[in-house]
Image (cartoon, rainbow, N blue to C red):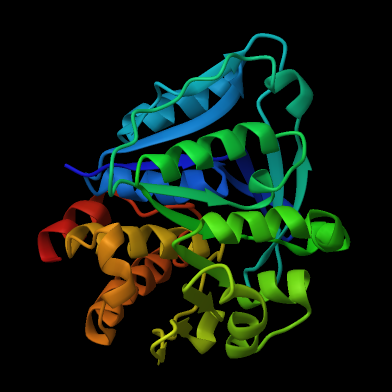
Length: 310
């Protein structure tokens, strides 16, 4: 059975509404999507680091309970597991404060998973361009490409890092060159390129590096562009409780669709419009579900029901 691998950060998200804490949940851009996929029965492994502390124990136990393989989670004895404070506004969108200790976490030895042809490897967020972490990310990217995996890249480049866009742009472009599929939100591309129109972003910044481009626009729907065609899909109009994890679970839905329809890396260049639309619908379904809770991923109950239906 094909497998899914991701590299990124594991973090404890403490969610605030009206300046009061509502819930504390393990999170992280790649982590959130892998959690949903693990609950849906997809074999998933996560490459990351945690401190050898109580928060790290909580996150490790959560991973095991969600069927995420922990073989490649390195515990750093002198580092602290990261924490974020997520403050929801009136539209349930979050702004963040992060507390991280990368230097200590990089003391741990590196482990490499057994990635095979047509497995799926996902990278995302500032973790994928952070200079302190780049050697490890690049090493794993090169390995995944050599092994013939489908590489999925979500820049997830938030406003907090917008002032660094010029500095990290060469690394963003390098990630795009590795990617078989790129997905980001309109906010990401405003922060990176100063543009909101997905067709302009694709033609001017993505197409040279990566053929397949997904752009999500919240309640305004999803745009998809390839060299051969473009399409737009509307999304259900719901009142969100929290939008944290929506994009991450959209990614999970796309990956689920790729696996469900047995799309291999060699198939991507010739995949037809109808199949892409079916795949994207899975992304929309999972993102919509996550918006209706404070969790960063789908529940086990939803996952079981979804797999039985789809």
